[in-house]
Length: 317
Image (cartoon, rainbow, N blue to C red; front, side, top):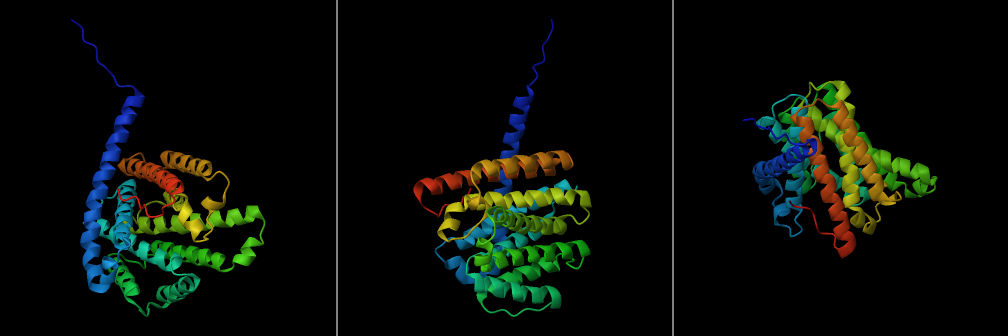
């Protein structure tokens, strides 16, 4: 008797791998939400309890961003061949909360608050001290202090990444504060500046995370993770398009023609670069799968808000 070995087609194999990665991401997000609640819950309760008591789900949004940042930190660590141990998990969770609070100072309370935050944060970076004015700032600086005690922030590449992120934030706010000059520019230049600001602000944010997770990652890989971070901002801006327009906030994704087509082009180009340039390991596969998931959910968010007119859907998976 003879036997025939049934072999799966490449498409079937790829489908199983994708489903496996999707399941892994779901498990990781669930686990890292619990980690975020554990690490950030007691700090929030101690230093800014009103954040948990508000009825706008802001605390939950902070935990959600922290969990997603931890998944990205997991991918960056494994990409560099590092074990994503408990210390790296906590670093990622704390960093996610710092990003959430810093972004709120920059984006949610007007240009004066954004400029004031940048001015005082520059004092922290250059002189090492700061003045706390309210509970929200207290929580931010407490979390930041916990982050800095777990990692040598004077390591040159990490320090450079942090300052590059600060400069990108400063440029973004300056652009918004000088709206008449910006609107007087030719249309292609306007789009170019908006794209650069989005790219740099999120790209440098992921480089900070990468240096926190894997300081030994070789320099030729840095630009690829920078591109991954930039993609996240473009995806976010498309997902938040309707809210941004109501707030009269200009972004590359709400000003470019055919934004969904443009976003797909950026997404496909970025993933191709990551697939070709990053080591062929679990970290790369996790990062690409997360980016695909983020891309799909934010397209759905954009469509729902466009059809229903609501702005409250925060994609809590």
